[in-house]
Image (cartoon, rainbow, N blue to C red; front, side, top):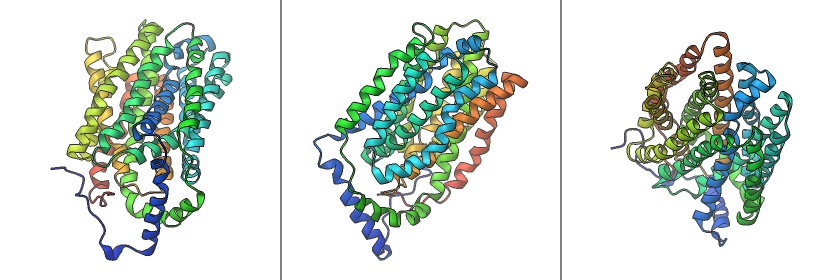
Length: 423
């Protein structure tokens, strides 16, 4: 029996007010927008997956180059952390407004603009020669991610089936993981800036595919009706589940972001080459690719709460252990355990939120979710670099893991009486 998810329930007929009926009518008016096109569901879901993959490559391709940028520009850990985290800082400011605009105008134009912007940012990295130029390109990457994630996640949530939501939504995490494999591998090729040129054509090509394949959004009048009743449903149906998902993604991504900035710097000091660092993080992403569908299946069978709690607790223990064993034979077993733990906490957050999602709320709901993601990848790298520079890396690993422990008892508290799942 599932431990945390209640049985599916429909509201009694007497509870259906006229606004709720109006929302249902709006849903029926919006849903056929996809159905009327000749594009099969798998093709559009595959397009969303490809976009998430491409954004992940753009996010992580810089990892093997960080030690070279530090040496070339004379950067300390704090400035390197600021460069890496600026991607998330601008996203933090833009995710929610972009999500609201996606609810009103649809996914097509935002995915197109996001991919074009990512291609331009990659060309900028290829030509950048100073810290502020690099910082501007990283910020532009964050703007692109704000547009693409704000639109790609609602699109995939709309296409996922209810019975296999955990597995199907885990495909998005798999796409991100494949990007985490491909990004560092690509970043280790050629000269330091060459990989950004190699990558730039991919988002430009996807922008063309999005514009050609995605249907136009439903007329604005059908969406205004949904927005008129959506805020009350949003507060009543998503309150605690959304808070839980956002807090878990915040602390998990903060830990992951700290690992992604601190491990390459520590490996470089141990004598690892840029190619070795890229190979290690490619293996990291490959392990996540294998593990995450298993986590999605686990959450479908046992509920969202169990893997999240296990992952938070295990990651809090394993992350400091990983940094204390960088030059020992325990490095790879501890790395694998840390990957499993972080995935267990991270993967169920998407289906947890979609389980209680109401039509017309995807953009703003994922806006909050993406803001939590961005805040995590801002605070994690910055705080990890700052603490390492003033104390040492083990202290940084311990302190960025403490929020994981705090969340362990909060998860069952927030999900103690879940709302009826959306049917």
